[in-house]
Image (cartoon, rainbow, N blue to C red; front, top):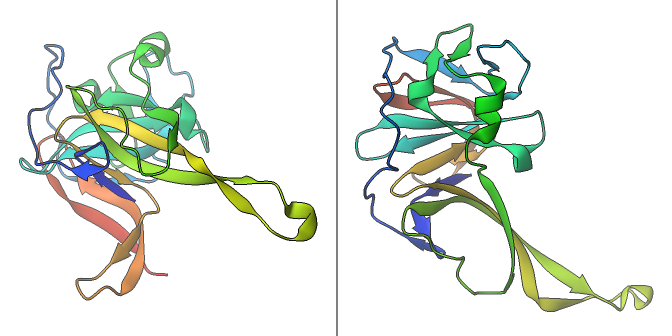
Length: 199
């Protein structure tokens, strides 16, 4: 699932990036950011894994890592790439666990009338999202009706960004399914592409 610069359900042209702190940007060579790649904070507590990444599609750079406990995306945090040094074996964070937990949460949930746009924000876009209509009654007769509202789970990302989720389906230009996203080829200066696993 790819979520690129969406606000209120409509596609937006890439714009300004999220204002960030004046952090030292460390340089690394190209490497593979793997699905489940585990970042290490300064205090060495086990904090989870990289689930998604956020890129700037104009500059083709990685701007943020989405770090989450395994299978708990609702607890994910948005980590600026300036806070991480990435190698083939490890992601070393320049912050401790307490600082990590103070970073912005990515996942949000709203209960909205079907077809209504998501709430807008001047500094943030919508990344990946999923919609779950709410069934109503009639199950005892083998029939279901649906409420006119739905639960929408979505991610907030910096305006103009594009979120790439691991295990996303990948299709070719002619619409054929070719596999799923297994990892990313990137460093803190360039996004080169994704690693696709055949299915």
